[in-house]
Length: 145
Figure 1 (tube, rainbow, N blue to C red):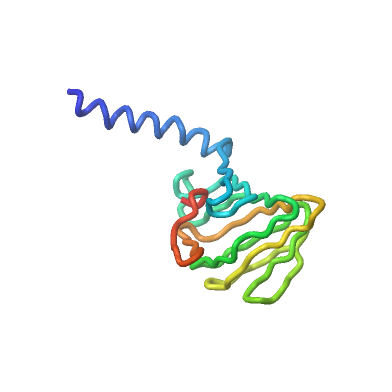
Figure 2: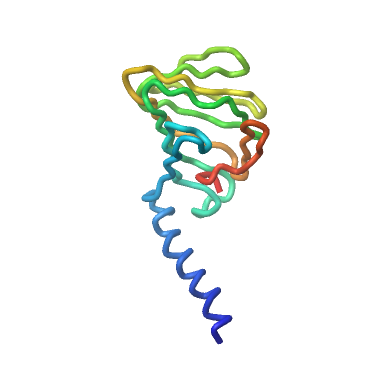
């Protein structure tokens, strides 16, 4: 009987947390040494939140920060909300700010360099199941699954 109670308890805990994920209450703030220091990611839509084809999240990059160069295995789209940054895409600099849309093709190496006075915020989407490669390691960002 106890063997059946453990999976049921784990399922109940996961279901309870999914209510927070579905409503966008949980966000992932990564600390130095993790995937992107100075970045806060908030997931809105992903397979774990009921979406089957698209992942949608917001990102806030700290003022004065630079994200690590990385690439995705699928198209990724950034829509600037506030602040400004320079996206470096395959070595080419592209400014991005409020109202700007940056479409990154699969495999394009990119990073962001944020201005010193304000954080940069964007809404981002890509196909569900997209994977990132950073420093030779490939993984699914947690806000996209």
